[in-house]
Length: 365
Ligand code: M6R
Image (tube, rainbow, N blue to C red; front, side, top):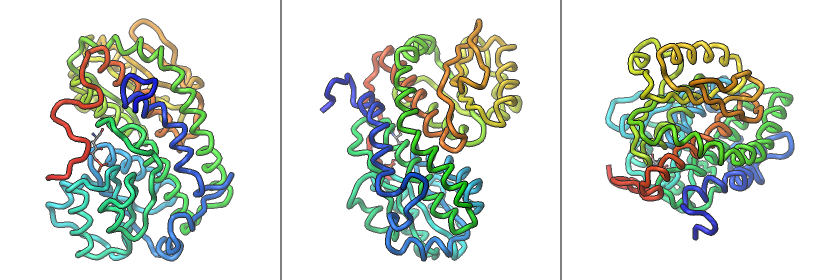
């Protein structure tokens, strides 16, 4: 039931504050992660993990790419991420002390399951599933499970599944980090930041009308470029995927630092450039990337921390977001990009919940 909403996608976008909270419930206190909530054997298993291999497809793969930043930054362990359909068809080396982590909303994605089954033969320490469907094949075949509490996701374009995957991945990262020297102080800082996320997502949702206005700038365009840096690069990838899936506008995402290495050649007034820019160490670098785009007549749409000092002018449309902790920024910054693609699709009159050629769950290869 869509309730008051015109589409399931919009309803699911608006459910995010609640489902992110539900995903934290019973897994974190005010300042700590409750490791036992990840499974009775979690403590013992996590103690031996020296490397994390993440496997997923589509949006879930993007969640994995964010998690890599977290795992290396917060837990200090090496992490590799690969799309399942690539992983399963190449010869791979899995260290015995690897945690094999599959991320899947449905838990029935054929390539992800095949990768897990193959890896089992190669041997690894343990398999962790981050999944939204209880009793799915992925859940049944894994040693540890973190269920995202997103509830059923009907829209083919994944929204609340993604942000609850990120929430789960951050909780997992903290549990793992504890075994690798994370101080109580740092853990508490990040957990407190996580508690602020539902409210921050709510703030972003209240920008809906403004984002709808921005969406008009995309209606008659054929190409767009999404830029991000650090853990916001996967958010740019996810933003581009959403836009192409439901509005059928060609969208590409690049780490902002790659601009000069090729994509800048494409930038002109017909190619809007969308950028996500929280207030971290990279924002100054990002600003110089933005100048490069403007110098070529490109129109910029910047979603930035209101303290980052990016103001609207001529060809720059700045959307001010609430200040967020650097670690939780990918969760919050995903939401305006979801709203943007939603409104572009509605303006274009496409079938938002059921985009052409796509299925909700890809159970064949
Ligand atoms: O169920 P899964 O998370 O394994 O699905 C993976 C992808 O098929 C899925 O995320 C797909 O990319 C979505 N349509 C993205 O919106």
